[in-house]
Length: 262
Image (cartoon, rainbow, N blue to C red; front, side, top):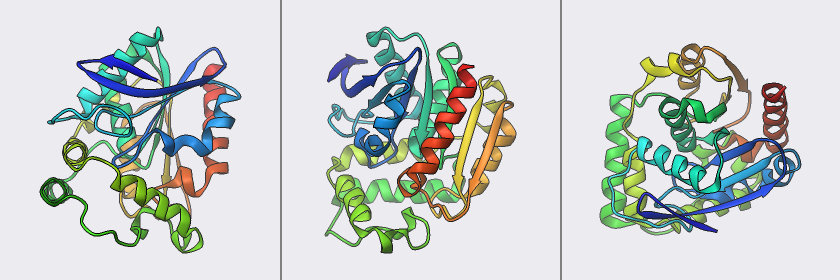
């Protein structure tokens, strides 16, 4: 389904049953299908909203610039259209960036946070790398098809599951290069570590110890900054922890949400 919000069209999927809504937000180069392996089990206990960020999936792809606060406003407007006053937020990578910004800008609408493979700050060196990547993709597109980037997974996962790695890479290549560049710039320059103390809801922070894209130190900073947070470091997991270890991910999220709702 689509909703017109903030002068753009957002694609979303809503299903399941339960007293509270859980919002799943994907990261850069992905779309709402990232959460398909987890949907059935989550929807057995909760109403679940998956959505495509502007510039991603089947959502509209207006010109940039984009920024995390804009994505957060898009989500707030989407919740307005759906008549949802508040939600639990689950965000992976860039989706975790959006979820943090939403919790800071719309605290009364945030029931809890699950932040996976994400951070509250991008260092100067990483910001320059993001900028170079965005410029290159905007100028040249994704270039010739290559092998899937094994850095996105824990040791051995891509080798053991090449089909999964190839599919994630294929879906990334479907993204409009200009929208990808605008999103990369949005997720490549932010710092609100000093604001984290304002997050008053419970937060579960999940981090793979072998994440080569978002280093574990970022999750440590999150856990120290958010007062009511719990940090779970997962040995052997890489950046795509929800895909690499879906059983662990679902069990952790359901147990956390059950505790919050109680």
